[in-house]
Image 1 (tube, rainbow, N blue to C red):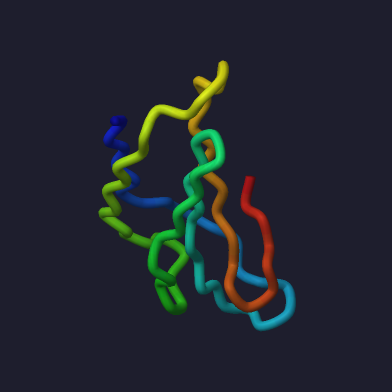
Image 2: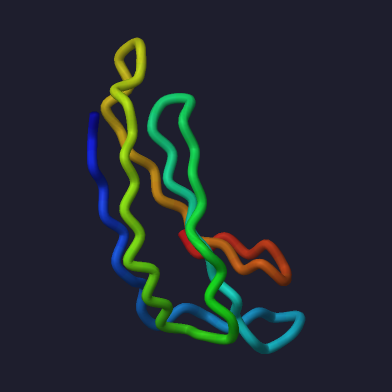
Length: 77
């Protein structure tokens, strides 16, 4: 098992559509994917999320974190 903490993000851009940001993050490891809670109208969200992920089958050794805006599905990579 792998324990992964996602604490926060800083200085996210506001949405081009609504001029706010409602960010959430996804954490992917192999075929496992979890999402954090949505933080309303915050460019510096604090998630303090803990993910407990099983080691995936195969050669996957990468944990991917992506941050999105719930309103317009902007990827902040």
